[in-house]
Length: 269
Image: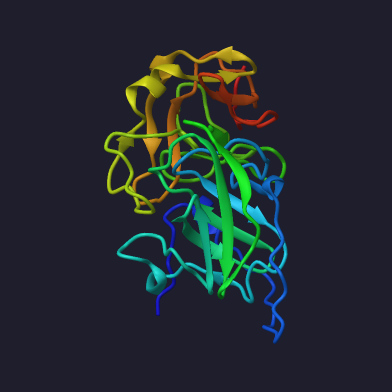
């Protein structure tokens, strides 16, 4: 059976390997908390959003390690159960990328409304605790590596690095989560079949800053779903001619802001 292959390195990284547990006659209880439900791009707790990839850390979350494959897709989208594990938010199932005894990567359903909702994990017929999570309309979050460098690519798909930074005037693609509803709207757990920009109200509130200086909105020609992926968003940005070298980048939508201390590789002034 062929493995499911995400078309970006970001989603491929969500399908990481982990240690397996042996099942037991007296199955251990699942343990996790509200604080251990985090954004999968930043691994930070806080408000999430519909159609956002989240990670749950805990113990005894599954009896083995399973990543989504082509054979486990459900009607062309993410599976609702994987390795004997199902995750529910307010009674509805989440899409699953990966399950292991200590980590689950999931996609929050797009149809949910903002507010405080309950998350519960089921494992082979045993349920864990109900824990509250908060959903906002948007929760912009940048993917970054362990050194705080934004995951972004040149238009040829190669990663921005210290030795291959973006140049002033160059168009690049920045990967993120939590940009909210799109047109057309995402179908729960299904990959975007084509470009789907943020809804106009959110796009008008979208602000990118480099070292605290707002970028001219004309420098952004697309912000929305990444075609071929479920839950992943991208922002197509033209680096300003006067951009500083390796600036700190922040993405804001109204009051919601991406995490601090993320650097963008730029060969600037």
